[in-house]
Image (cartoon, rainbow, N blue to C red):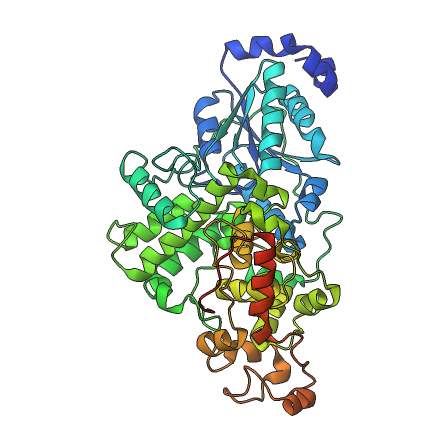
Length: 513
């Protein structure tokens, strides 16, 4: 290819597809586009590209601050992604696969920039693993259209989920809206011809003459950190090698106790693999297969802890399934259409108290402070904090969903949205509207000695296990801890009235959970 062709503007590339015609007739060179699949092992698209491309594979990663900001990506996740990408770059170097890093100012520029890259590296097409949020799906379609216009191939693969999210269907062919029947259909599909298989690592390829890798940036403008580097590195080491080791240790040492310990925030009872799954340093296939191997080959049944953890991974599959089948959940819309009419409370002062962990409910405040100081929150406490915001304060779930995404290292739209809509009783398979977690009883049940509260609400650390869950007014004053900002006992009536007003067919609640 001439230097002139390498310098062609994207608009000219679109208008002149004949420039690419001859390369399609011989051995191929392909681009693999890394996104939320930051690993070499068991990477569906990368393995397919390496198998098909006889003239070699070129990898690319697109730094897209506008896109990330519009989707509320947390600064700590940006940092985590870049550190994982640096690990990918080292692994690619061993395979002689060059890595190009493109920085785009506008998301709309991505298709043209990738087509231009294809011209520069003399590639015959691009491969990537599909993403399912509506903006990402539209972006990918624009990329495929741009490549097709210039006579190049573009292929998307299933990798973010263990099974294609469109695959499990109800008997009438529709998408599921309840988890339990989805899980049964998912397990049936796996047994009936979609077994969970984990791919290996690509083979080393011949060096591509004249192509060198770009440096991986260490930070991105607009994503300033409030969590110090030492904490990030200690809590969240990045890369697939760490993720694989964490998976191995969880399955072998803590997996069997998972069901009993998963709800206790002061105990390391969860896998903490959600950040790795969110950015793809490990695949759901690897997770499910490792747990099945430790569970005598069973995805359901067997060891209660391991089978329950597999079920949690299938919950992630379910939420992606809902995202595909009901894209309105990606658009700030409630899954239950009637609940879009609810008149939420928009008290910014109460919302700020919730964000800062100053609500006067110790378990809620401990949860929020854990999020703010580590970029992660224990799953049981995510439900407690979310239900407190949406039921006790009756603040719009979208405010909470956004704040979590802006601060979670494992922010993943499908799961985050699904969890928030469950808590707010607006979503698929949601908690009944009259289910309102009592934050005090939740605290007494899951943090009985107050160990978690003492760690994250140190002003209460001297209190007894009996008093720490709901300190007396004088004790609060002495500890400089606020009074409750809302009366939990009054939440039920406000919730019922609002749901009844939005949907007159709402039945009278029979109990309070």
